[in-house]
Amino acid sequence: MVDVAKIYGVDAPASGGVDAFATTMASPLWVVPGWASGTPASYSIGSGNLFYLPIHVYESTTFDRIGVEVIGAVGGGSLARLGIYEDSSGRPGDLLLDAGTVSIAANAEVSIVINQTLSGHYFLCYVGDDTASIRCMDEDYIIRSPGQGQDDALALSAYLAAYKTGQSGLVAAGLSDPATQPDTLLYYYLGINLRVA
Image (spheres, rainbow, N blue to C red):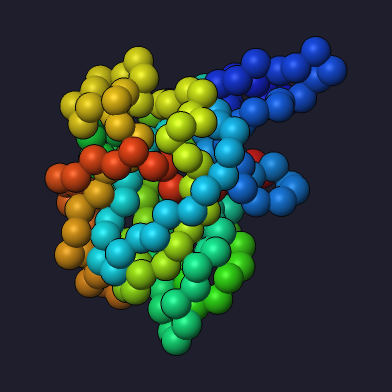
């Protein structure tokens, strides 16, 4: 049985369950492992911006989907590619999973079927071929960040995510291996969600 409080790094309330983990998608359980936050927001992701979001999975857990919630769609045939990178001393390292693409052309919760067991630190990633607004959590309401307490090569204990511009070609070609390194830090974190199997 999965200990939900350990996976998501938050304390269970007295009545049982988890009351403050970061999730934007409906049941079954969608999470951003290691994050705890309160208030949702949105973030407009520029075309070709390759975003990396640090996560920490506290015990071995299998996830069966990866997805985002598009709340500011761009129309046409616009796509975003999602994936997971290994952690390499606090930076994105080797590619663990290129999950494929989702449509960002309409407002919707969009996801890809995966079968990935994780334990420890990783980076989720998102890159789109057009600008779209994605559900995120506002930095003013972050309770806990996976950047805290790990090798902090990207200063993610002070910032929440990182990105690299000019990477729209990866949407069609696939994610690079090893990771293209980010060069800009960000105070918002994107709601790149994983679903517990």
